[in-house]
Amino acid sequence: MEQTAKDKKSNIILALDFLFEKPENREKLFSKAERILNAVEPYICAVKFNRHLVLPLGTFNGVAKLNEKAHAMGLMAIMDCKVNDIGSTNQTIAEYYYSAGFDALTANPFVGWEEGLKPVFDVAHKLQRGVILLVYMSHKAVWEGYGQTICNAETGEKTLQYVSFAKKALKWNADGVVVGATYPEKIREVHETLGKKIPIYSPGIGAQGGKIESALKAGASYLIVGRTITLSENPAETAKNIRDVANECK
Amino acid sequence: MEQTAKDKKSNIILALDFLFEKPENREKLFSKAERILNAVEPYICAVKFNRHLVLPLGTFNGVAKLNEKAHAMGLMAIMDCKVNDIGSTNQTIAEYYYSAGFDALTANPFVGWEEGLKPVFDVAHKLQRGVILLVYMSHKAVWEGYGQTICNAETGEKTLQYVSFAKKALKWNADGVVVGATYPEKIREVHETLGKKIPIYSPGIGAQGGKIESALKAGASYLIVGRTITLSENPAETAKNIRDVANECK
Image (cartoon, rainbow over all chains, first blue to last red; front, side):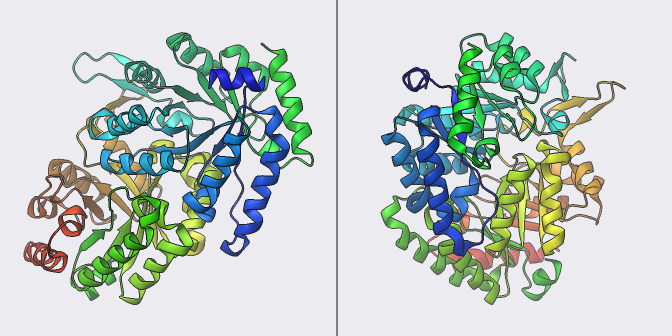
């Protein structure tokens, strides 16, 4: 990922997410995704998909084709599936997404290790792919779960949930963590825990209110931008501007 | 759901989950799913899908057709997608799954309410579908997240995570909660919190070690059974036996 960002001179990840479309509009949806990817490609280092395209287009007929295009452009492809199921299910999900060409997927550490995320890391290692852990998300209610204080039942020691997740990312040797750009102070705190060992991927720029500069200065390595680009009248120009602002912050 | 279980004289939900298959085996996978559903249908009240079939078969071409068959058999269809994303994404996921005919989906309360699960409940209410919340899962590492103790930052009051989730299920007016059959003492505890207001769906029977009797006696309303039936030499007979044992426990 680091090499791709250097080659592409960009640390911007395009979130290719669209709102619900009726199943009969699937071809239009695929064309729109393809068109935006083509336009924006020079200014990004990776593309991130979510269920917005997997569910209507399909894993192998639809999204795998977009992954092929992304790879041909020298981009990485990330599946933001936030796996949080039992181990055998997580493993099956990971096998399908990696088979469809994804270089990395996101996972929720809340589910734990044994019979939880261990099988995902095992598959990732076997196939030399990545696992990116959610540490602090970008939405309003993030305080309810990620921001809560947990308490060791034996010692009484208190820890913030997201700090505990950042420590798990180190222990489990994750390839990245997600911290919302809407909470730059959390990026700073997580960055202090992780140092240069694990890069921070930061969504929530633009539509959700996150700022490029504050996220990068706090320690984010990659910025994930969706609606600001995909809903823009000129996605290429918007992506170029965001890339330029981000490169100036380095 | 309650009426369907009465009509079908069964509180068994079939988890139609299979391990990873190469994309070229998709048709075989669909036929296998169809065959087992046909065989087992008289002994169950609902079928539960997960990404095991959605990812290879597709939402609308594959799984929606199985939902139609399930509905024609008088069964409910549940999508076990464990949504845990930001609100706009959760909403899009819910819209796709409900459009594909699912009567209910599962969601992880860890993501919180505002810009989290609220949009899912809103869509569900609009379309008169259900939302089932994860309260305590069935796998080994469940203690890491669902079993942890959380601490109110202001009052210092301590609560178990799953008890807090059960209370959220009441507050958010969920249509069901999931508690693993592998932890009958948690079923009992959650049942004490929920009373008869919200039914407990219990996975983990058989392959994962959960027992029919102990789960039902502890307060589970529905048992979710997957591999014990799908990997059985005679799925119909196995499903019938499980149904009979469950009905005797009433």
